[in-house]
Length: 566
Image 1 (cartoon, one colour):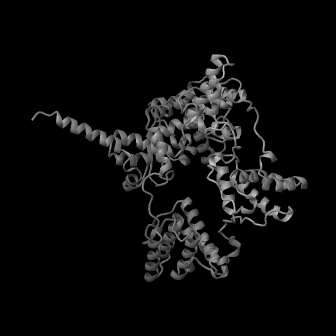
Image 2 (tube, rainbow, N blue to C red):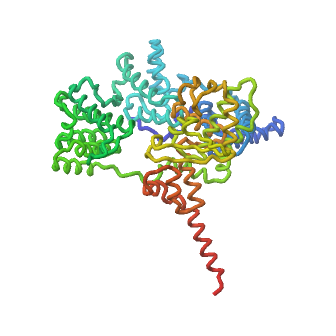
Image 3 (cartoon, helix red, strand yellow):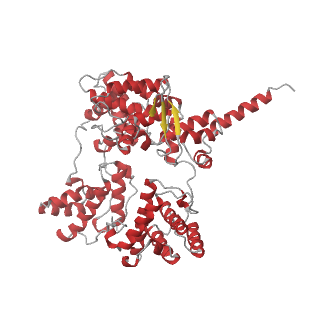
């Protein structure tokens, strides 16, 4: 059996014998037929592209399919050059490839295949089965490239193919291409004479857990609806958690979790007809059965969703006045599957913030809104100008008012943007607006007010009709923009203008980073800035972020002590 060779997935789709950038540099340097300036430009272009990709020229193949997805990720702004300079570098690198006859994308040819694969592929071509050819051609050439014989193909090779697709960004949907290849392989076993009879297992994509509500008794659904309605009404004299009304979003989440847990019980083997009330779910034996089913689905490990469901069952036992024994047992179950709280930010967000600690990158983000507004309005496409300014205004607000993107997207003039008449402008979020139920108010600085007024004077009729009450409206002006749409626009605008990867929520982290860097230990102000309910949450999330400034301040203290007179 032929073993899979240690060919890097990075070069899994690069044809054998493909020249590298270093090969081209050496060849161009050695020949004397080019004008000196042309020779210099080609070599410079190859080196600059290699530098932008973060690889030595010897590791960059002269293959268009390998280069294209990687070049598309390069941001000229991030590497400190003008877009035109980057275009010239890429053009010179392509010219160097053309000088060596690398003009067109190399197609997969049957002559590239080794004998065992050639024989099989000739049979596929002779059948003129377009379904098989389309599904298998890239997979077959991949297997040939990593030197796996047809009789040795197994599931791990198909998974390596999917990894290679993802790594090289060959396909827009690697999962779909992988599944098509596996299905094509199994189909070839049935259709192609002599095809190796070693089928490849395909993982089941079915992840639907929640069962249709029609499967449950009407009494159960009615009971759940009555419970949710009661939680939405305040009862100041109640000794349970119903003393305050829960937010609509919370009520919706609770009902979804109740139905999800009931579905898990059905998956565990319980008949849906037995679930006649919410109280039925609170029986400790039933609760444990459902939680074990959820754990089994998650590799016998707890998760945030499992922890939340267990906590909900515990809380519902108190609300529905279950027996003390039932409460204690549900409390014990909830404690056993409680997920550990997240300590600090995710590694990905820390990495992105680390880049923003570099002064030139931080300044590029801070100056982005005004730079967009300073550009002259396009007379031929005013909508694009208005759209860019609206994106820039959203970024400008997030830089000084680090609110959640849901609040940003729903800003209304009368409710949230208030002008008391003395020239000042405030952004005000009430208790009903914020996630924590705490009001928060920002006074907008003059430069932001200027951008706001400039945009409002220009946006009609390109972005919305006159009189639209929303700061970030849909084109009809009847509703605010969807938060996910606005978040995507913000991330794309920042990427386009600066080359930085900054999503809408990262602005909240960016605000705290800047504050703590200037004020080590200033967590209470950070808490108020973000609208957190508890100081402990702020400390848990951002602890250590001010380490750089704290250590610098301590070093300055020691240096000062050394200079004191005794």
